[in-house]
Structure formats: structure tokens, C-alpha cells
Amino acid sequence: DNTPLQASDDSYNFKNVEAQGRIGTQDQEVMEGFNTSEKEIAVSTQVKKLTPITRTITDRKVSRLRLTLGVQSLFHQNDKGDVYGSKVDFTVTIGERSHLVSISGKYSSQYLKQVEFGDLPPVPFQVKVERVNADSKSQRLQNNTIWASYTEIIETQFAYPNTAILGIRFDSEYFSSIPNRTYEIYGIEMKVPSNYDPFERTYTGFWDGTFKIAWTNNPAWILYDLMTNKRYGLGWRLGEFNVDKWALYQAAQYCDQMV
Image (cartoon, rainbow, N blue to C red; front, side):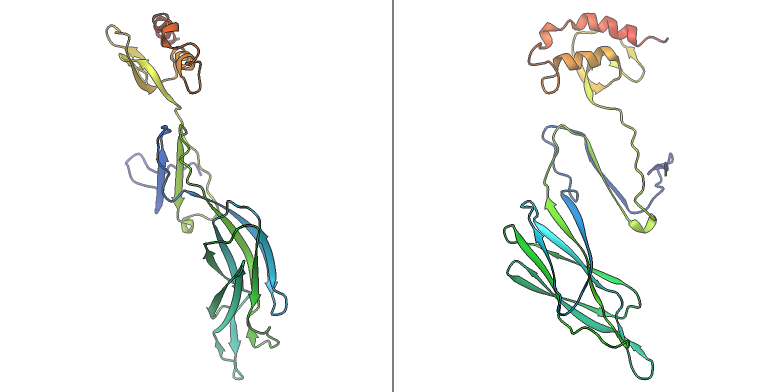
């Protein structure tokens, strides 16, 4: 925690981290790879041959489903005690369509497999998970099947205009849990005098009355922005011509003086 992504020497403290952002323009594009929202619903139930499990999907915004199916263990043992892999099958029925899902291998503990389905029927529809194989009655064959969860996936395609956003993708191998993320935020950029350096808090020469777009925390120019901006301020009511920018220029210089 509190470890910066990039060190002061421009090296990176973490591997396989992808960051992507948008600065908050009106026409900004959707961030690639971050255009879905997901909701995972736990099932956590053993699937037996004669007791299929059913769930109902009602959200019309859901465009894909991801089912997490698995086995508590999977192997068979012969009379000599040799252990081999095995195979077990599920039938997943979504609406009227059925899909075969197989798990094969040798697992001494729980193993989960994720399977994704698209082209979903109109809501509401049912998702049914059935076990194809007969339930094992022998300790030598371990193949209990489980339906762990399902995830509703919604294709958002939201660009979030006029909103600064940041998406981060990282390899879970390097983290034992979801890491805390902190950000240093300067805030919105706005109109400031063209001869003004907002970081040095200095004004160069005479001001000709024109503006540039930059960040500032000078309260006089923040007030000017709130009075003239037509999206979130009073711009449609006041307009720039009804605000005395020259008086604000004097006030802003006073605000930038050392205390």
C-alpha cells in the first residue's frame, strides 16, 4: 500500500500493470477493455444427477453470462492403488439451447472452470445446469460436481463525457488481495489569464484580456469559471460580458501573494 506505480527514476514498482485514462472531454472515446460491468451471483451448490439446478435471469441489460462450474476433486483409483485422471460432463441449458461442458484431469482438491455464453434469449429466461454422469457411489471414483457461481455481464459502452476516468488492469499474481488505489487529483482545468503561471503564481507583463486553459486553485479564477461556464456554472444566465474580469484580475493577484 502507498507504493507508487512508477518510481522517481521512471522505473516501475509493479509488473504487468496497464493504466488507461480519459481527461474528461465531451467527445472522449470509450476505454478499451473497460467497457463491461459484471455482477457475480453465488450458487455454491453440488450438482447431482437427479437434481439439476436452475436460476432465472431477469435483467434485460445482460448481454453475456459466465458460469463457474467445477469438481470438488476428480480422480479414480484402481485395485492396486494407482490414481488416474477422470472426466465428468455438465449440460448447461440457457433458454432452449443446450451446451455440453466437460472437465477432465486429475485433481485432489477443488477445481473450477469458467465458461462464457453469449447470444442470450430475451428475458426472463432460465439457466439450468445438469450433471450428465451418474453420481459416484465408490470412494475410488471422486467426481462430485458443483455450480459455484454465475456472472451477469453488461456491455456498458459508456464514454462518461465530461468526466475524468482512470482504469487499471493488473496481474493478481503479484497481489494477495485487491490493492488500495490512491490518486493525486488536481481537478478541473479552466480559463485563466494568458500571462498567468498557475504553479509559480506569477503574471508576466501586461494582460491583454485573453485566456488560456489551465489548472488553478486561485479562488478568483475558480469564481470566474463558476460564473461563466455554460455546463455547470451560470454561463447561460450571466455570460462573460456580465462579469468584470479586470476586477477579478486584481483580486486574483492579491490571492496569489505570499501570506
